[in-house]
Image (cartoon, rainbow, N blue to C red; front, side):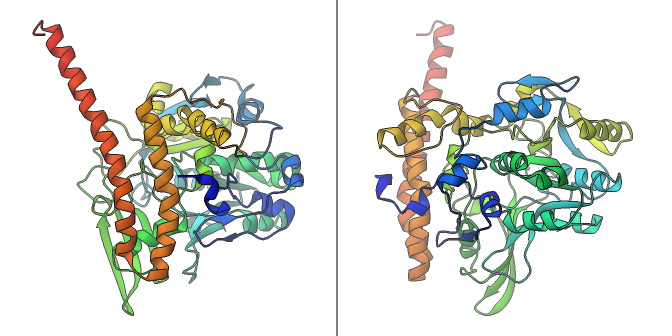
Length: 458
């Protein structure tokens, strides 16, 4: 596919966090593809507040400035700085039950709030009565409000409105976000002293890629809720008795004018293969920050043997901030947390496939943009086509799937025909699976050959 012919709104490198819109006092909105757009100009680039549009600094420099001189700090090239590493879940209360995985995110906010270290939490919550924007960043100032913001949302959000509230409302805040958002806030904090002073703690999520709002629309439509008729979606409904990776989706809304609630295992829905990247936001393929290197505490799903069998879920936990490290160590002693100490290799293994795509194979995506003479971000890795041919093909088909999913879904909505979208996407999806089947077959045959050779049968 010739990406140069694709609508510019589908190939923007801007993460559209809303930080730029806040700084420039401009508006940001969802476009027709369900992605946020904000204006990038030369002034913005020179100000250095956009993760993908600045040559002033990078995540290495910012993280070193934040954590490099702390006592007892360690460093791993893959995951960044850390004081402590864990795998586990919250043992007290219903924090784990009400979370997507181990409940650590909501729990740490509760701890910071109860210990009078913050006055409010900036996190993503459901909007009230807005079917065009189901979730937004909001500020919670009580334990009940904090708990209401639990669970992962695979949905686009932005920060401009809530940052304006922070600027106009004195207080101490903690925030949670994906790598590009946290890094953008670190960059903004260097330019805006008020924001830098008021946001005391930044909690980071490990994120494979961002989704447009059309991902939610597609999930709902498969269950009978036409776009615009969905009022609620839980992307990570825990299903008791299943592996933590085998979760469900819960959707509420209207079908033929009647209010309805439905739950479906994600294994029964199309578009849930994260590797394929249906509705992937283009910009999220141009980050090399896999483990949220500038965040004080980092949380991800524990996709690890011995942990995924537990349907209630577990977190991998990277601790960088000293105050948070002390809170966790104290809570381990009193039994409020059920954590296992771990090492950098284990943390890495929990996200190894995401790391391969985002970091190790980013050079090939940069190479493709250079070959097409397209402007692209300067990253910490250099452009290169030096990856295995099969991996190049996988990268190519992922890009086709990502871009075409937005185009075909828009056409399907205009036609009012879900099957049109499915018919357009399945050939691309099948190409992807065929590549992996060939790869799997080669691995099996190679292993068999090695076994037979070791037994001197060959």
